[in-house]
Amino acid sequence: MNFSTSDSRKYAIWTFGCQMNLNDSERIAGVLESRGMIRTQDVELADIVVINTCCIRENADNKFYGSLSRLKPIKDGRPGMQIAVGGCLAQKDREEIIRRSPYVDVLFGTHNIPRVADLLDQALSTGGHVVEILEGPDEESPNAFQIPTVRSSLHSSWVTIQTGCNNSCSFCIVPSVRGKEVSRPMEEIKAEVTQLAKTGVTEITLLGQNVNSYGRDITKRSPLFAELLYELGAVSGIRRIRFTSPHPKDFRLETALAMAQVPQVCEQLHLPMQSGSDHILAKMRRGYTGQRYLEKVAMARSAIADLALTTDIIVGFPGETEEDFEDTLKVASQARFDGAFTFIFSARPGTRAEKMNESYVDPEVISERFERLKIVIDRSSHQSNLVRVGKVEEVLIEGPSKKNPEYLTGRTRQNKLVHFGVDAEFACEDIGGHYGSVAIESCSPHFLRGTLVSLQTQPRNRKSLPILVG
Ligand code: SF4
Image (cartoon, rainbow, N blue to C red; front, side):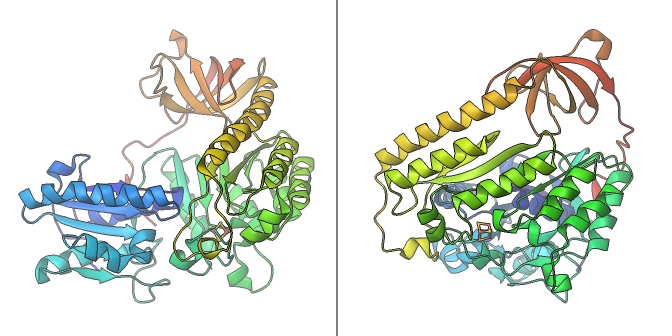
């Protein structure tokens, strides 16, 4: 492993998928930049293009193969350019990728990130493909989370606490590509968060496929997630702690109490429901019923004041009847979500759902259900936002609004998006990363609107460590 040579080639990274993949891309960038490589957004100028793939949904596969074929003519015109493919799809479809795109130089797995620069060297010297995909952590390599990392934000950061998943949801391909749950030691996570705080990060989001089972593989007893929240709450400089995602069946009272008792843990819970129908939930192998889900929501709300609740819901799971869907609407309405990621079912090869002997729901019926679900979710999110009008909310400022540059955007502790105007007295050259108090004046189902009434600037070390070594 070589982290210290001088290699000034240009690299680009394309990332598909979830926050876990974005966090992996930050570590891939760290490994490449520790060699001296320079990032470019322009693939036409890149000597190396890394595609970090996702295979959760069919359209992610399609986007990946589309992107790969766009690189082919660029590579043909630039001898010496290298293409590396990592992430879940590389893990799952290694032979297929090489068969369809023989111009790919390196395929690497999610556990091989520390070796990505070495693998590129190897491919260059042999002139052939290099495929290195481990199914679990590499005992021979440096710890995959203690390698250089290029963070995309100076004030907010993801922190992976666990990889893999021991569940077997029938629609999900993650366990077969990311392997069994492996929790990072608590001391290691705490050291990373402490170092992030020293560089000016004030908000962290803990990542895992099922954060509630964090530590089960360490203690062989009960999970340690609540304990982790208490430990991280004690790290000086961290003002906000978020996490994603807990599995409803494993969401425990001790976690809700830790959320209530650790002031840094935000009043926000993303609890993937997937369906409200007991029949469909059983087919999904989720391990709870609609009623049980609502009990978990009630438990969380009774413990945590002013909690915002979001979810994931799949529409059109094989065999979903009108009655099943109405159960989903009913449970969603009772849960009073602040927002939801809604997905149309797509069968992933190799999953139990793909092999189910059930008829698929007609696409027109799915579209109509999708719209009905959106109405229910928008209604509850609008009601929840209306309650905030007239109040003053603490906002972590992100920067100028993409839609209207006269406004800034930020997030409340409940992770609500806020667009707000700023008077001249608060004019500040680089306002992103500071905290402000915003008087909320109006809202839609998807955002709040208001005016900044006070600003608390954060001490930041702008020159410190764009590359962070854990
Ligand atoms: S909990 Fe279920 S949906 Fe989530 S990663 Fe594990 S198997 Fe997939």
